Image (cartoon, rainbow, N blue to C red):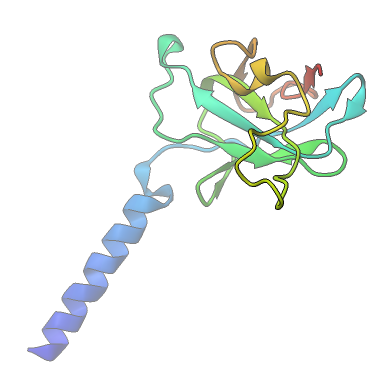
Length: 142
């Protein structure tokens, strides 16, 4: 009885993990890029790819990448590297760190806040295999 319970539990755990990971059947394409402001690397912030359903992208994944000191990012879809192929609207968010002395103050944007909204950022890209160099690079303004 106990052995049957353990086998059933192990099976349920495996099915759950397969459903949460790459078991969805979607392919993922590596996506890396660079964000600059005035030609210089944007050294902090994040890039988010929002699936564009109006162009047929029905994925449930919202790939995100953090910017490093050189303005470079690599997208992750939850724990999977990359993004499913398709069209995305792209946002870039960069804010100053929260002031511990005034944690309720509104955030101060390092770049124009229009880039943090998919409707106003002006960035749209198609994730595809063998994308051209620089296909996922973005230039933002202050």
